[in-house]
Each structure stands twice: as structure tokens, then as C-alpha cells.
View 1 (cartoon, rainbow, N blue to C red):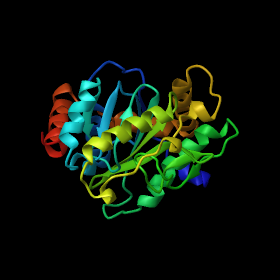
View 2 (cartoon, rainbow, N blue to C red; view 1 turned 180 degrees about the horizontal axis):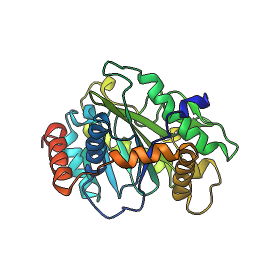
View 3 (cartoon, rainbow, N blue to C red; view 1 turned 45 degrees about the vertical axis):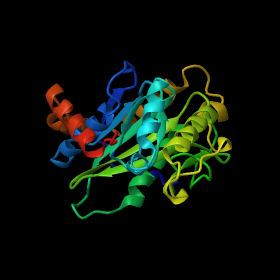
View 4 (cartoon, rainbow, N blue to C red; view 1 turned 120 degrees about the vertical axis):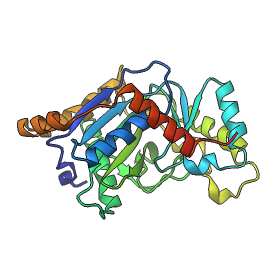
Length: 280
């Protein structure tokens, strides 16, 4: 891991929504990322958005186009899950309070910047540094059988605990990571596999991941993190950023930071749902 990948956090604002666990629209955090990304592209500060979500199931765009996606969504809702389709890349993920989501919202160095690899490396460096104090090293590379698979699956001892996706706008971008900190990795993989059993019936196997129980685990299952592991992990992330913040950077960030009004956020949620929603 190249620690230089953590450079550029001097004016990064921490937006901590870890304890916003009331049942709300599952698209709200994605809409907030979308809206703040546009502001960052207009000269606003870089932002680290930390958030958790009550029991929800978030599909990728490709998942929402599977032939059985509407029926699978109704099945999930009957089990108490809120269902949405996100606008960032990747495939289906279940979210709950044991999953810590980290969004890094950053300006592009130039409009024609396409350094996808280095953007993912920055998130990898942040998460690996947060875990380093446990004495465990974090590997990257696709884990066979994991849900939401990708080249930047993060794992320990061959078990995936984190996936990374991105959303790029003209002048800024968002790197989103879901970090499975607490709870059962196998229970989550079983849920995702049951989703695909319904959503992908009759579909080309190339269009969805084949999920297996032995691919995924929470950090707490791999490492003894003690009580309050999700909150402790978020504190590690915040500590890494705070170590790099400068007084001048924070003053500049405060002068340019603006949060959306309720109306602006509602409008962004509606836009995402209309653009990426499931046809039922």
C-alpha cells in the first residue's frame, strides 16, 4: 500500500451520519452524495460521508434489469427490506447497521481525468490504514463467489469484507465503499443469493454474480474487534482524516461548504428514482 494515496485530505470535511438509523428513504444517502458531489465540482470542499442504513437492499443498475427484478424486489419488501437502485457502479448489496458505508467525494484534477485506478487506491489506502492497528493486512482483488464482485474487493485471509464502487460527474466524483464490520457474512450472502435466484431466473449467467456462502465475512468475524465494532471502525476512519487536516484547509472548507435544503434533497431523490428505478 502506498501511503501517499492518503495525500489531499487537508481540507476534507467529515460528514458523520453513523447514528441516523431511523427508517428513511434508502436513496437518501446516495442522493446526498450526488448533490454534494456537484457542489464539490463547483468549488466546494472534499467530503468524507460516513453512514449506516436500516435494513435495506440496494441493487446495481444491471441487477434492476434482470427479468425477475420486480418480483425479487417485492419478495425483499415482504421480508421487511427497503429496496432501491443506486447510481454508482457495482451489483446488489444488503445494508444494515453492521455495515459502515464510506463515501469519499473529491474534485477531479481536470474535467478529462479518468484515473479510476488511483481513485479506488485512495479508498483502499484509507480502509487498510484503518484496519492496520489490528495487525492484519488487507488484500485487494476479486474474491470468487462474493456479492458485488470487483477488482477492488477488499479481503482478509481470502474473505471479502468490503466492496468499492464509484460515481463520476463532470467535475467531481464519489468513491463509495460498503464495509461489513459486524454480523454474519454468510447470512448476507444467502440473502443475496436468494435475491438472484428470483431476479435472475432465465437470465444469462454472465449478467449476474454467482454468490457462495464461504466468500464473505464481517471484520468482527475475522478480527476480534470487541463491542461497538462499527462505531470503532468509523472512529478510525475519522482519526486518519483528522490527522491530515490543516487549519487553513478547514477554514477554506468551511467557507465553501453548503448542505442541501430538504427540498433540494427530495428533488435529487426523485431524480434518482425516476432515472434508475425498477419497472414493476
